[in-house]
Amino acid sequence: MSEPENKRRLSAILAADMVGYTRLMEADEDGTLNAWRLARTKIIEPAIASHHGRIVKLTGDGFLAEFSAVTDAMHCALALQTNLAGGDLVFRMSVNLGDVVEEAGDIYGEGVNIAARLEGIADPGGICLSASVYEQVKNRLKCDFEDRGKQQLKHVAEPIGVFAICPGGGNAKVHKPNAPGTTADKPSIAALPFDNLSGDVKQEYFSDGMAEDIITALSRLRGFFVTARNSSFAYKGQSPDVRAVAKDLGVRYVLEGSVRKSGKRVRITAQLIDGESGNHIWAERYDRKLDDIFDLQDKITLTVVGAIEPELGRAERERARHTPTENLAAWESYQRGLWHLYRFGKADISEAIQLFKRAGEMDANFAAPFASLSYAHASNFIRGFSTDPAEELNNAHSTAQKALLLDPSDALAHWSVGTVCIFRRDHAAAVESLFNSIELNPSFAMAHAQLGCALCMSARYDECFEQFDQADRLGSKDPMIWLSVMGRAFAHFFSKDYETAATWAKKAASIPSAPLWTRAAYCAALCKSGRQAGAAAIRDEILGIKPDFSLAFVRRTAPFAEAQTNQFIAALKEAGLPAA
Image 1 (tube, one colour):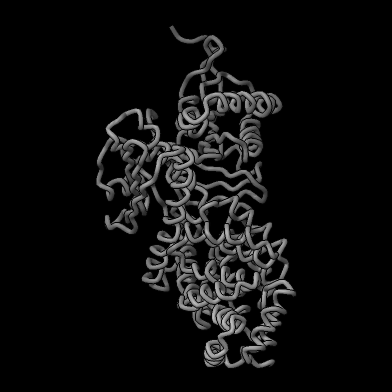
Image 2 (cartoon, rainbow, N blue to C red):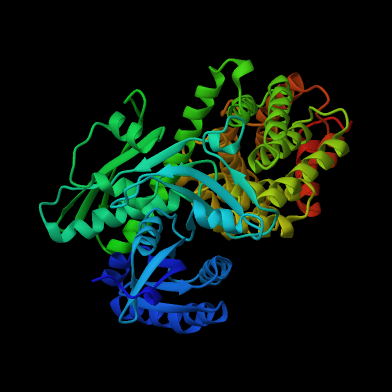
């Protein structure tokens, strides 16, 4: 018997599901239930009611809501993700427009099924919408849309056009993953479920939680597209060929790993693999005590993601370096620019500037080239390569601001603003920007290092060493690791611990890509610790590399607070550095 005609209707369906619900319940069942109850009563239910919708049903870790207007559903989803951001709970959400059938207050049908499947492939804190919804709202919402193409959803006969949406200001923009010359040329990665080698199925939640946390953390890296959890976890319990997985999921890199728990210890392994060749790019093993399993999980996640990011960057820079110039798209131009920038020579920085500008011209909505262009200008300023230092610093400031305007959620953009603030001697603003960068990407090693420098220049020495320690843990292979080493040298110097300052400055100066300032720090520390002959030798080495390095140059370009600059210059003067 068919359903009565008045029970079938076209509706906009909003589906939502909590990220990491099982892990949260294992860690703190009462706290999770209380947070879920508060989220419903304080945020979810009022938002749905104010957008003219109704909650159809609540699940243990999510809900289904119905709206008569698709714009109401989308505005509600955006409001929910915005108001839930920063809280204890994170949700995946989706919106679909389709036929539903009502029965006993519940709704069924393909419209509901598609909404549920779309929610499963949404990013944590993000929203997936069907092509039918996108067509209705694309000119009505100020959002960034990412076209993720047609996807075959489980138990849905035909492939569905899928878009992802990010809450925020600005005009609506669409990024198409396969369009040449856009940010969608950025690399993609899938994190497979970690194998549980403990021989105890009760430990499955830990290995699953490990992979899920890494997926969530990787999704915060703006330079990479990360396959959603449900797509990756389709391979759970299998031993697939990584190259086949990469092809099936359409990704460039695959992360896989295992967890073995024995008594009070746990061993976690992870390896990053090139999906095309099957070659290992990076692998690491972590042996830890199992004092607090969830605290350990958080620390390992941070460490793994911190290690993966520079390795992915290195692989991408090499890939771009071997791409013919005429074939360079925006992403490749950006990556080749980074390859030149990280060599830190005058000619290389000049080439990097041109490549970053080219990437920005090819994709005007791509924030990263403008952030890196800012740092290239700042590098010219601080290394003394510019004929017009004031103009160079102005260029660094304007391009950093442009990057931030393009993408306020980009950790690199906040980092570039913070870096320029250091060179402009606005240390309070630098600290604020760099804290924002770390909040957006806690595994960003160089944000911790640069924050350490900003805190050092604010005479907050105890705090700065904490940031340098974190940078070293996360970024041991970062091409700018000299930043935290040099920062330590200056922090000890300004604290008048000259022997320790000399040790760190010597180490910093031995890093090939480090600036001449590391040798200046070494010279000053040697002088103040009574080793005049050594200081004179380093002074002569500095002048051999840069004959115009002088007290006037230090006064003009040093990013330190005034008292610190005076202390530094006094030591260099004592070491015999020329006045001008």
